[in-house]
Length: 112
Image (cartoon, rainbow, N blue to C red; front, top):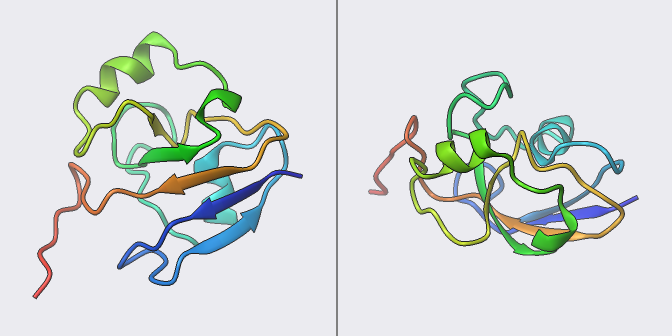
């Protein structure tokens, strides 16, 4: 069973987290099942970018991006070469490390 290490995020998991998930599960599903309430405005239908994550380790182990995901990622805040929509990134048997960007198109807050 692969492990997802989530780097600290001020809102979703301030101290970071590690969760186990079954292969074949999307990153988004795994986070939600483990009470890390990442945004997913389109209900995981690959129609927005609110569940954007940056895969810091294990990117190559995920399923390939399709054209729809690639097109949507062009609109994501903080896009990186190893960005994925967490609703479309399917886990294999390999552990991964993800970073949830500070902002999304749907969610921009300022720290005070």
